[in-house]
Image (cartoon, rainbow, N blue to C red):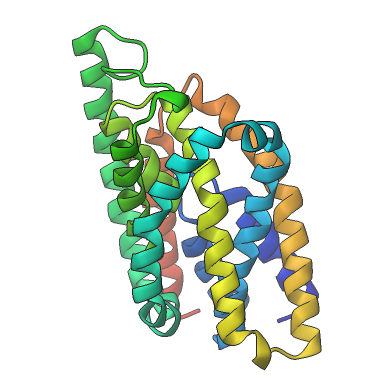
Length: 268
């Protein structure tokens, strides 16, 4: 992997981590297009630089993180199912799922269809209950432990590359009556223990095999994803206040079809 490829992947991660489009899926496809050799280091890189983007949440939300001890109990409850499923499925993820471009494309395409259908259903429910943001409009501090746990179950679907961690948690939260901005913020905070654990566990298992140059590339990708994510989070928060996720669904379908042609028809 070259320095330029590392920077590009860092930018891709920073832009897509918090959008409902699957950052892991985009990293896999971007690596394929740039001709980066499939290796254990690349898979670890794709996992680890996500934590760089997550650190942007820590910087932007440090006051809430520091002050909201009760909220963090709920975050940890939501983290439990993800931790269990991620631990049990780690070998499958690392050795099979992260190598499958076809799985990513199917996940992006079907996820886009589901996202569009969900938003149309959600809009109908809003109109039916004459509310501004869901039939219960639960704020972030009102999220129950039960809803926190089920949000974690939704997030665990993202072990499949292309599903989108943020997309799964946001749709799950909206379906349970949590307000749009509240579930987006909860999803951001839930990403902190999730990606910290994923990165730490993967580096513990694989880090000893990295060469010195590879550690340098990992650090570079980490920093680039952090800086880009700082901008992406602010944009995304502003966007969700007045927009649905339908266009993200359309984007997922288009990108899946484009990469299908590039990978399976033109054999890139």
